[in-house]
Figure 1 (cartoon, rainbow, N blue to C red):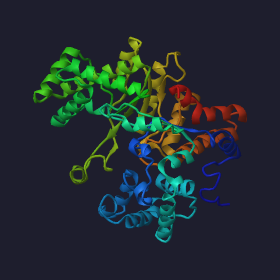
Figure 2 (tube, helix red, strand yellow; figure 1 turned 90 degrees about the vertical axis):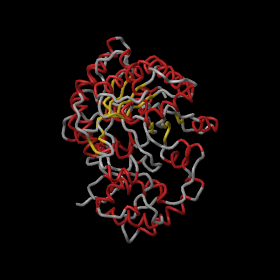
Figure 3 (cartoon, helix red, strand yellow; figure 1 turned 180 degrees about the vertical axis):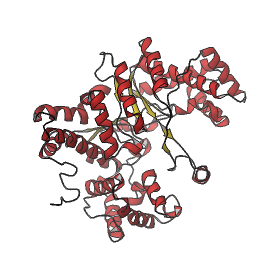
Figure 4 (cartoon, rainbow, N blue to C red; figure 1 turned 135 degrees about the vertical axis):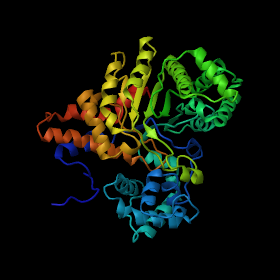
Length: 467
């Protein structure tokens, strides 16, 4: 018998999985401890003009699919009318079957708009009109959309030069959802970018009232911003880097390297790596001293298509999985911090599934009994936040660590319609346990396994971050 598509037991293949999801996972609040939602839109309780604006603008996943199908760029990032852009996405959707976009698209239509029709060229106009009409109503502002999904905490991603004015406004408003900044200092590492790097140092110097002329003044400026972020509720940092920087370094050498960059001299690859290693170590010790959690997103190979980058700019959907060697540098980095007992709580995210076992075993080297799940193998992200990717991450973690200590899912998204991905994750999690129970691989102790499920969905993250 064929199961209906996207019914209440979607992805739940056994009665045990269904019980776990409906009784222990479904109603847990969401702690979105890493995302890219714009704080300005949260602060202003933004109301989106139409379905295209909230759903297609900025969504690289959809853009890549549309390009693959030969859809002209004017309907993707160009100046075509919004309704025509949505119509082109509707043309694409039936061809996305077995891509997670097909599931996400229809989950989002159901959960936010109560639309159960499949999106295709025939239904496109009606769906656009219905969703756009709803988006004009007060209970479809961005804060209302967040509340609709039972979100408790949001951690945005913020550059050290940000004044956090929008976070302050959200807090002053007394909104029931906690919105906190997360410190993302990637640009202070990009010493190889010449004038762009120097321009950033000038901005950092201005906001910290520090003239950055050497390594000491750079560290002073970063400490100033770390203190400012801490005062405004920040307790997490995040880094998006290809691989860990952990070469042997001397601060005196890093200081000379920075001065060379400031004076416009060319740097060798070894010098660039030594500088990055020194700055990353400083930042990590600073996180530890403040009791923060540090996050590292490893393995993205960005902006591969230089022709399209020259037309559209960076971060427009031309990134892929990289294949750097991760293990030895990651070990050196964590060990250097741990050897002086300055290793903060750490979440490691991996983009290359070939490195899943590396990260799952690496975290066990530095879980020292001081904190439950101190070093975490983070949820599958970007290209891996789909069914196979999340199952692989959880299966590897189960076999080589403790899935029961896992802090669960995050959106890592810029979209206000992305929260059903938490539901997607929870269904997949419950199905893994349910299949094991049904096959006799686990006991049918629904209360205990249900507790583990609810911990992964909510309680582990709440306790880990102290929210």
